[in-house]
Length: 214
Image 1: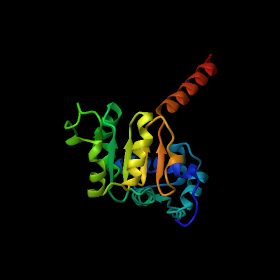
Image 2: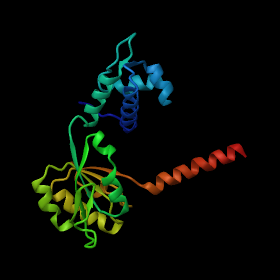
Image 3: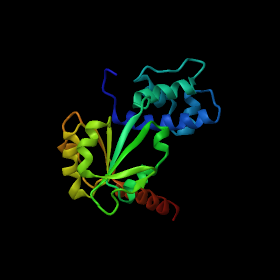
């Protein structure tokens, strides 16, 4: 892309992609930045600025071709090819992620699930057998895996991150209650997901609404 894109812009791109998918499914062929603005609660100016970071994609007097724009955003997000993914930690959250069929619609394919619990090793989730973490290095070397979803307890996450990085993983979707950014090399991308923090923000918004309506 040739330039640094702000985190705020990157955060909005999946929203554009998702909403354009809704429009495409509804048979909408084109949309103006103003119409998109009203639907997404983002200013038309912001939408144009965001998309101009990548070339614009719109035509004056016409707006945006929905399918074309969605395809271009898919390329920007790396969704124009299959992203193979593994899940490390086959507890309730790990199995829920592996069961989430919509990942495949967005080009993310779970091809391996790993755990240390001998009681569940050998069981299947959506047809994928849960394997021992001891088999993880060999699996990574024999399969094209780009992303690892880490759903382990905090005390195991850092050790497992070392294993993943040493065996070629360059993207970690981290659900463990610890930030991994400081312990991975610069060529490894980490997205930390703290579910409790999201719930706390929701709680704050609920409290604000209740105080406003009191």
